[in-house]
Length: 301
Image (spheres, rainbow, N blue to C red):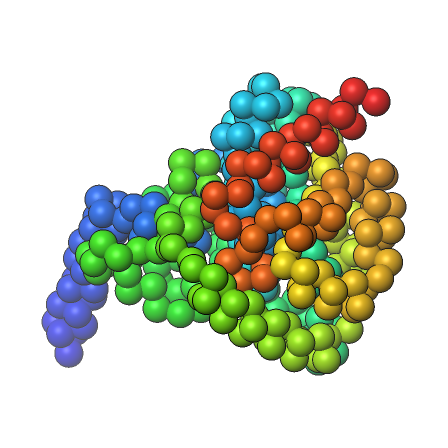
């Protein structure tokens, strides 16, 4: 029996090492967008927030237009992961390289990050999902992530890609969507997304804890540089729903940020989205330039 257990343990160890080696050699920026961000090195400056920022704010454009001293990394995730709470704040701190006081932090805010189901008001569900659940990020291969730090089997980390990916993570963390969208597909996507968010509208309530932790996040990052909040443009249908749910959201964000709030909702009829929620890839540089111009203006005041 002891010999059998020894062989089983030896096999498990060898299998784990081989899987780790395979991931190290073959995991690419198209393998797993969450994994790629988690294993990235520490940075001084960050873009934070939901998938609206992950897809919609380009670090390279910010660096070019703002002449930043440090590289800025897009460490934004989906809205159910990038929720303002204790675990996400810890996740940000683990990635933060404390350089000096010249860093820049762009925090994308949308109201869905501040609303929770009434049944979840006594917990922080996002703490069980990466990046918040990862104790040791910045490591590749990351056995913690591979062995259970995720909430679904990421088999595409160890299975060769078929070359048909519709997205990838660029060198500074932005998720680039390469899929082509025609008007018919966009309309279908918006209808589906709006149905999802309309149902969400009827099942969530404002969670004051989230506002508190956003304030704590701003206070922490302010020690190392300038912090700006940004509201991204969306489809008009989405904007109407959000304004109905939280008509004073902009006032709240402006107060929390001490006036450093870049409100781009007025561009919601200017830039076409892929699904009502995310601007198309071809508009990302333009929107990022507007953010950079706004940052420049406010820094000169």
